[in-house]
Image 1 (tube, helix red, strand yellow):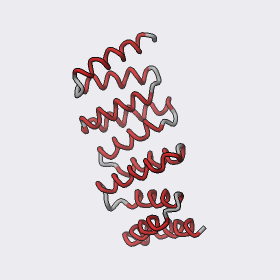
Image 2: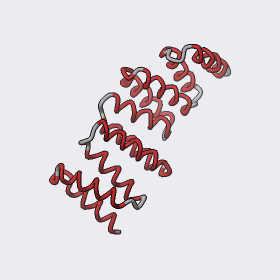
Image 3: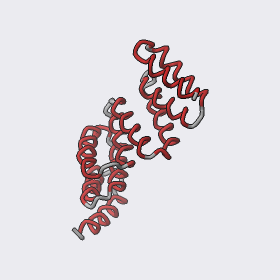
Image 4: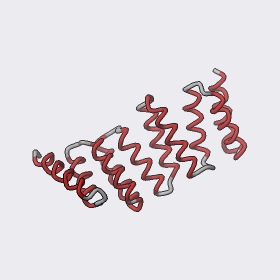
Length: 173
């Protein structure tokens, strides 16, 4: 529908007057989803989530529904991961960070920052440490990778021993 861009323009102008208005942001999200402008929708969702962390569950539902149609979308993956972190589900956030890495390997430095941030909130989260170690290994930052692998194996050698050994082998290769 050709009226969506006009509506988006109007809401964008109104948003400048009321930048914290969640209803305005939500309308912009929905309008951008309707015209398949996923990156813009993700930007507004990110802003909405930053201003209102209680919107995490709704944001998760919205993005998961849209991803069925949108397919792989880096911006939506990042906002979905943030929403899962706000919803205290770091294991789900890591799943979407892994999808970013798989489909957008050039994002490794951004993913490093995201995982380090995740680990400041959830410092004892071994899956994030393992994933960050894998990224370090791919970038040949072996000392950081080994340091994290050592922390993971010390935390639970039975559960993570095999994965850590595989990580060490990847470094040796």
